[in-house]
Length: 381
Ligand SMILES: Cc1ncc(COP(=O)(O)O)c(C=O)c1O
Image (spheres, rainbow, N blue to C red):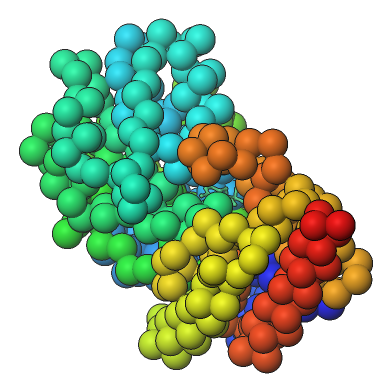
């Protein structure tokens, strides 16, 4: 089976990550930060190393890094934790359901309104449209850096400038861009940055929210923090007050090593993903009976449909007959599907990692074209 579903979770991890996980299981599984014994202190130190690694990766301070179980929970914390009753939020068509459903919920509970900015013909969210949508009560702009459906990447630097000019918080979802595209929270004026550890950063399932110290945010999960234990109200010290409950030490350690690997091999990773993505885009565009939705050669995400089939059927045939592990259907981003006109059909998505290879791309293209050809003929008959 050829694994082409890396935008969901990368399945293959580098040897150094697997080795670090095995070592973590042997040595660092004591509860971090809850006790004064050496085992607890060592686990805590490992977690701190990962805070420093993330902070360095996105240009923030280690204390601004809050660990979460996933990027979904990081986005929930950012949106719910900064919610302003009666306020207004701007987001884009590209948002994932972890943003859209949270916004819908705040509409009910906090009387919040939100505006969705649609992309132009080039699949770009224009900073001018964002600026035009700003109202007196707008306090937050949310942008998905790279779409998990089309692979389009937005110019967060330009959007960050608009947010800075209007003194509005800027939340960036880097679930898909992490490990592929560099982000600098200071240069890009980002207030909050949501990270997924288990995709481009090649780690186990985990996430993080990096929150600049000037953001007024409240915890949304309450419980033990190992600090101020006599107080019945949740401490708001950062990051501990926002990390109630025991942290998944091995997963967090794996993120340290995944990020280190990505940093060390950045050029090689970028070049290989670009080469493979470009090959797919070049060879699936202009093919009879295939509609291609992706054009960003840097993203590692390529979505398409065989016109005469719905995406789930195509994906199922590609999985069962050709042993390609990819994904069909709707990709938790309903507005992108509305925009592409694929609400009914969904889309077939190939998503790559450094551990895929060119021969796999050639094989995938061969299979997809063969299938498109077979079903094209069936329609003509
Ligand atoms: C754009 C985007 N945002 C958020 C998420 C949620 O990430 P996680 O799976 O870590 O919860 C995903 C997951 O695929 C995603 O693609």
